Length: 213
Image (cartoon, rainbow, N blue to C red; front, top):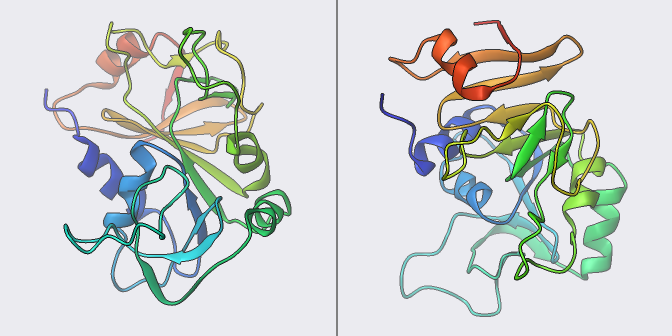
């Protein structure tokens, strides 16, 4: 079984972002999505530190130290893009002006609860930051994560054991094994990678899944 690598996961997420969407890409894995957006679609990337109209990552040697995303990574600015005070940026997030946010996760529950900022580790970041504003403010929340932890435990859980970022906020989950929608009936599997059966995915996930392929 050949799992999707991180760039393949990012490309799969990018396929589902429609023309004209205003999108925030969270810190970590989701930042890769910006490098795979279809060139024939106009998509407006937002960063919570105050950018609208981000482009892909700059080429080596072309970085601008004054132009970074919320994860402090160098970014580019497309023609017509702008940067502004982070207070205005959070007003966009909290005001429901983002169509989609793409976030990483430690756990997602069967009801769409999201835990993505703290595992209880002593050296963890001290606060949730803007993730809770994105999780609640965006019209759709896409989660991009590996299906299993390094120790082989499912990140899909009946109930999150880590501190929550948002409750019942996740719309769709993209992993290295599958694409799964959060629905009122439960977690609905839309796609599975080749050479992996639904039964095997179900066994690895450890939570009820509905086959909707």
